[in-house]
Structure formats: C-alpha cells, structure tokens
Amino acid sequence: MDLGELTAQVERVSRQSAAEFGIDRSSDWQILKLQEEVGELTQVHLMREGQARSKGLTPADLDETRVRSD
Image (cartoon, rainbow, N blue to C red; front, side, top):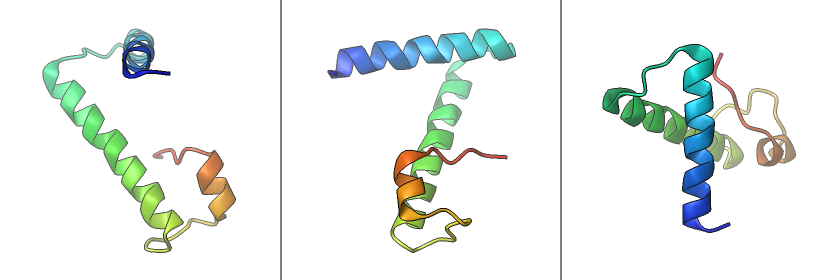
C-alpha cells in the first residue's frame, strides 16, 4: 500500500465515522483527532516497552490489538 492509498483509506473511514456519529469534520476536529490517535499510538508504544502499565495485555496482545479509549 502506498501513501496515496493509505490516505484514501483514512479519508473513507473518517467520512463514514463522521456520518455515523454526526461529527462536523472541521479543521479543529481533524487536528484534535490526529492528536488523539498519536496519543493512543504513544500509549501502546510505552506499554510495549515496559514504560507504562500494560493493563493486563501481553506484548502479543499489544502487537495485535488496538487499545481503545473508554
């Protein structure tokens, strides 16, 4: 998958989620959503490296699953 394909896939998912949940995809929302996703990636990285609570997840769990915010 190249960057163009990945961008198109992210756009489709974003558009679908916004429609489903009634979200206005404003420029504020887009940058804040990006920050949220980077935070989740950071959390999993820290958990995987033993620098944060693992919340009961094994390294294999962290490699295979996405941590969801409650």
